[in-house]
Image 1 (cartoon, rainbow, N blue to C red):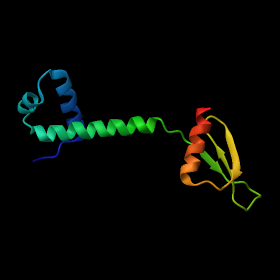
Image 2: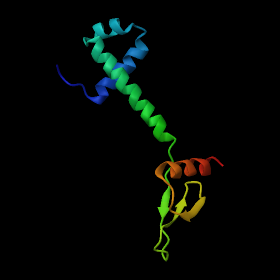
Image 3: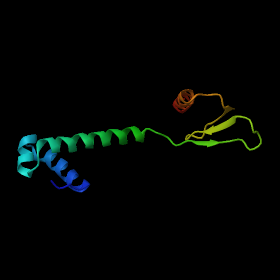
Image 4: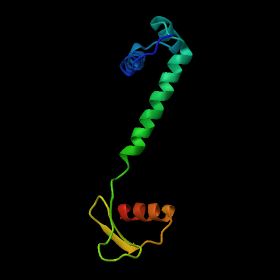
Length: 104
């Protein structure tokens, strides 16, 4: 069994969508096992879902204060908002704070 390139897999998936054939008919015509084709479809769906999730993420820049050695921080959000505070947040609390600040 040979490996197909990403371009070949993409061509197969697009060809199936445009063919109007059942999966079995299309796979028989292309000479590939239905299980292999289903694997390509699932992998493509997972990749698309990951890209949709990543599209909702925003870049933030963390800046540490220059003069204060204790645990203070400044969080600059993508929309220009700044949050300055003592660093006493858990990762989950910080993520929640960012979501809330971006939503407002």
